[in-house]
Image (tube, rainbow, N blue to C red; front, side):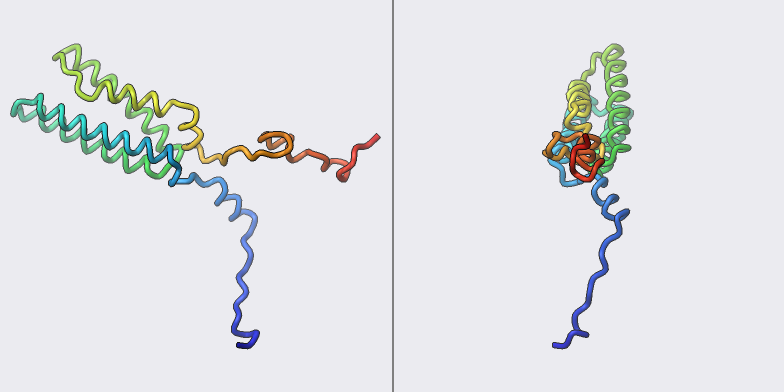
Length: 162
């Protein structure tokens, strides 16, 4: 093989490396947990809603629309973006309000308790960090504070002035 057979790969630009570092990691275990909980919530809502409907067509249609919306929400949260997290919080809050209204009018609680649990999981600080796209703190000289880590001896050429 000659030297012409080898191809030199161009180095990545700094902006590309920064984008890759700030992009949310969809393989994060907390994002997967939230997605699985939403799918489970859709299953529970379908099971309870269809059992409670007693062949009443409007109740069956509302239940199936709710399940479709929950599965769409699960597909959205799988991306792991901050926008998906905010939308999930809003959707779960609306689902809780709808469930409480339905409870007060017809004594039906199907899926509302699971929505409350899901909202609690979404509001947990670790889950919020998982959906924020900010990388974890690096264990450096000054913990993870980027302002202190970047200024550790850089201002005067690595030495203290005095």
